Length: 183
Image 1 (cartoon, rainbow, N blue to C red):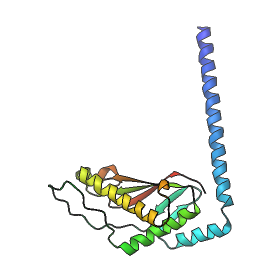
Image 2: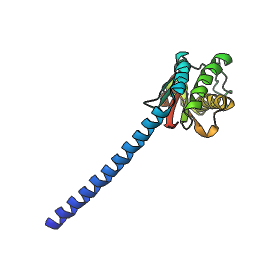
Image 3: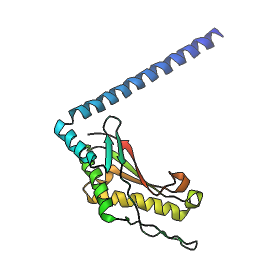
Image 4: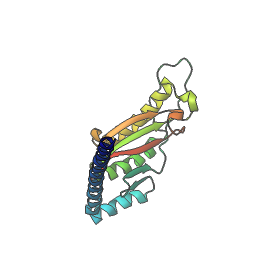
């Protein structure tokens, strides 16, 4: 019994040591990221703030979050029960959508190593969680990614994902998630 307790104690100590090493590595990564943000020049920060002041996008450098403030609206799609293919995604107002996405592209040119997931969402509840609903949501995300690429953002920094109905926020919108960060 004493040998079993000694082994259990040794295993626990090993786990604590591994946890401490992991914690130290994570603290070092956070310190590196904070240093990168500090090294972003005052001029670059001012330019980012000017983009954010337009009110179309938001970036939180400390928390590494990108967000569309102004919604990107898509043209309504009329879906019939016999349809097997979703109509292509189209912006409701191309100029407005492009202006919003352009602001995000400008910010991403300063935050050069960030990798972003663009999520396309739909309304429609559980009815939207169908093949067509998934296609619509995915095409919305891909439309935003295509626009970002056209505005000079490397496609390797972007991912698209469809989240129809209850799989997402059950709204016809687009959300951004930061997958990786770096300046």
